[in-house]
Length: 331
Image (cartoon, rainbow, N blue to C red; front, side, top):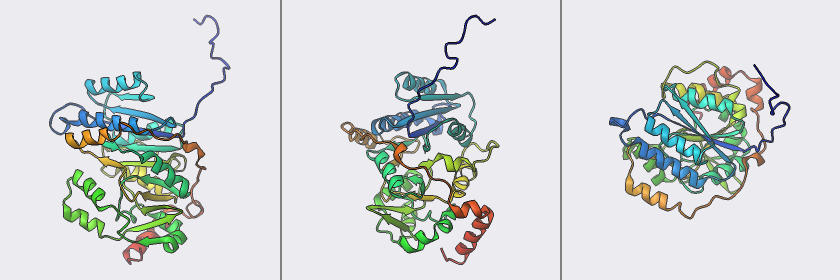
């Protein structure tokens, strides 16, 4: 039975549209073994994020089958208006399924995907904004230097061949070695690995006063949602984490846009891992106490669609061509 008229019938909704959304999936099923310190790491991640964003940012946190204590913490964040959306999946549906379902459900064109063990340092948001604003073909931006990644998911090199050969520069001096070492150490790599990456072929491009490295990883990255989402598979991923899922649901769909995949020359975000370095974390949080990000909106950045060559030429041909160029060491 229905009595009366729904007061929302024919009512216009005045939405205040933000320009940028941060999506963080978290999976902490218990506090044993690998996960024993994960909640402490996650809390530092959230605290650093909240201290470094402005009013243009919306935040979604996805509990991907986490335990009750973690879910209670996320609920408290929502009740305190520190995040604007909390999603609770009873079971772990996999990282890419979680973030892509939320990507499809949001309206913002700029999406930052972040792992739950990232520390957001002051200025990361402004630097991200400046890269997208200064380099119109930017479509995938990481605020952690990623040398040696320029040839990964790289049809962008073919789509922007003029930019690549006329304006690119092979140099390692643009990459901050200490920042690179910190990241590689956090994922269990040794000094030799870092030195090899640092001394690999590093392409950088410069426009205005902004220099960036060609190539980027995705433990924390910002993408243009609209062009990328056109190519994301509709079927669900059968992988929990990795196993090629990032390549299939993020890297390859973005690669089909023909936009540029870029990273900053120094770190503005830090990978903490699953064990919190307490003294480091305390110092980093303390450095944010007086920081307040400026007000600016990603809505001011013009929209960008896929490049002409990627609209006209089938992706498999572009991918095969780039593969041949790599094999003969042309790029």
